[in-house]
Amino acid sequence: MLDEVVAEELSPDRQKRRVAGARRGRTGLGARFLKAATFGILLPLVLAFGAYWIAMRAIASERLVFRPDRDLVVKGNHYVTRQDLLAALGFSDSGVEQSFNIFRLNLASEQKRVEAIPWIKSATIARIFPDRLIVNVKERAPLAFAQVDGRLELVDEDGVFLPMPGKASFDFPVLSGLDSVASIDERKALLIPYIDFVNETRNEVARSGWLISEANVSDPNDLRALLVEGRETVLVHFGNQDFEQRFKTFATLAPKVLASNPRIDSIDLRYRNEVVVDPFEAASPPGAGSGVSGKPAGKP
Image 1: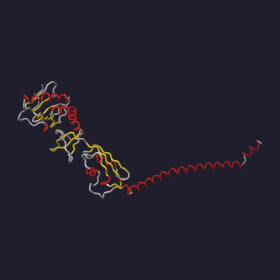
Image 2: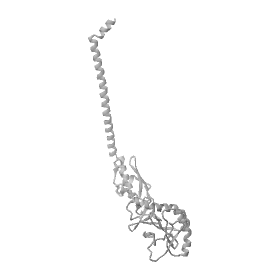
Image 3: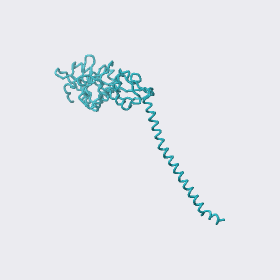
Image 4: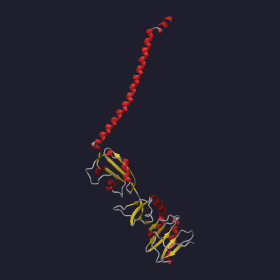
């Protein structure tokens, strides 16, 4: 029987059937591979075409038409008007017939245009299906008036000059010494002593009855403030530190100094354990608003 099996294995017909089966197996594997490759290429093409078709239909859809006069929603604005935002976005404030497909708007570009408005510190823009555009803005907070080329503007803590908005009123001191500085970073640095002064002395100023009328911030080592109480006006050198304690010293000594010197040019509080008083002289230049501090105080 073993001889018969071996003979059968070695027979030409048996060998031909084996070769044909192997060929059929290889052919089937190749076909499956070809089908998988074709499917892998065609499926992304079909999906891409479908996405393109949907996008084209969306752009042409009447439901996605954005009309600025009707569909623009503005939030967070107090000083920036709706018309300002429409102009920044490139829309007409009176063209009711204006219309755009909402998907044609580049939100990143529109956000930069809105943030280019001086009063806008930051902005976010969102598309709401099907046709709404929401602009949420954070406005800058002014902290003082500033003399800029002979006119008054507002300035915030970042040193940004802000045009006066309509229908708004502010009660701030007037700062000088900023308009000669071109760099916004330099202006921001000059404002740091003034901001510290206001924060540290807020309660003491309120209790004392003195008001800060003007301040000169041109010298980062010497904040000069023009203080007013009734008919009394005093220019005070506060330096660049210990503002709360120095203001307390001024509030305590000012009545005594004014009693013995009814008219004084300035009081210098920069020196430790000593107050330098300059008597008023008719020829002395004006005070902090002009950037001149009067006759230099003598050193102790």
